[in-house]
Length: 239
Image (cartoon, rainbow, N blue to C red; front, side):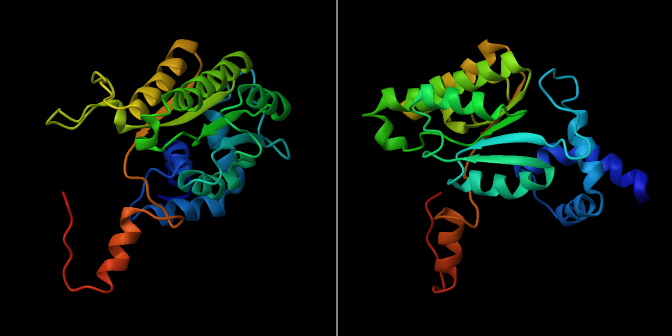
């Protein structure tokens, strides 16, 4: 409790909170702490990256620089909001950084020299990828490998969003990080190749395997159910 308790809470939870992955009754209180102690939030985030030679001392006006590819997607739009209190956010869409154009992407990273890349960009057309696997691999694997190499050379940090499609779904128990992967689709194979590129680079990174992403932006399953529930007495949903 009290100020010390708030600071301990920040030090433990600030990074997961910025990714938008945690939700629960305590989130408003955490956000309240962030708003109450903006300078301390900077120090808490800086603490996890202070050993990076490429990370700037986050004091005063010297804010950390976050490159956020995928700014127009659901995750990317939420990241812009949640990262904003933490430093300078360089939001990148296809017009600024087309991940199918590796030369352009390399130039953008060299221009902005981010301390942290939070990559929510991806080729996500699962069905289309079956006939366009080369492009899926270009965006989901080769571009990710380029980011990883930038991070390795600069001493920055990479936060990358992957997918549960790297698994085959045949295991009856919940998956853990160390379970063997076995992607069954072109999309899954391309995303797994991106993970492997990060691993092989030796860069410092976090990889989040997500599923059923939803937000206030765009269409998604949750919004569809809420809309139908408001107009129907019963719903039939395929499990």
